[in-house]
Length: 264
Image 1: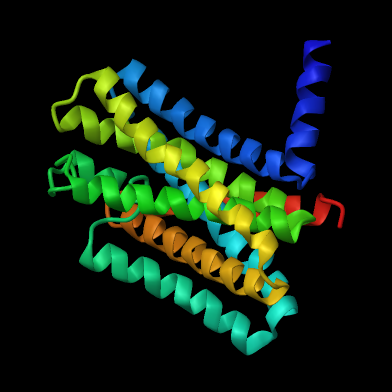
Image 2 (image 1 turned 30 degrees about the vertical axis):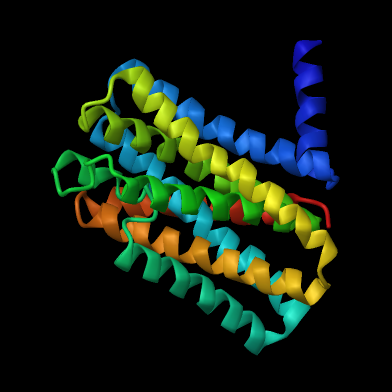
């Protein structure tokens, strides 16, 4: 009976598009992040290989959702040129924040925490960049739900997959910066709660024209592409490339299969 109840809960959480379910989806994403964070805290960190595999898998999911999920939907809403422009803006925004503020994706740069490249220093720059990333994740969840159909499910799946190594990375950074396990968990929770805030902001999408939703979704899709590419580039610079490509391929084709299996 418990299993039936859980399946019923997941069905409603993934397929309905009401405002309360948008926030529930954000809660699921935050829960995935904190699950990874709790695991990392209990183990005192996560080793190279499992973390690299999770990051690569999640990067493949993000690339699939951005390229074959979000872009066709935005193209249908806006046309080819404006869809491409919106996606390009998303890539550019994340590039500029990463370049001039700090690494925008804790999970994507998790490997750097093992080599003391400055990323382990728990500063407001790290918190601000991670919080901005989480905020965009929340907005993407809400926009996907607003568009409805497959897109909402795919966006949630990709964000949740990425949240697990992200939570691990935030805890690893906190631990290496001298925080205790509880302190590292609280930092991860503080950053990840921005996902819920982003979904709350994204609820305003229901008040703007559909073209505006398309533009915002395109920008979010561009951010997915940037994070996916950045994650793979960061991992390939540190680890054996074949296994990274395999895990990324698994993530990409898993989301592509989910796209085909989901009802319209």
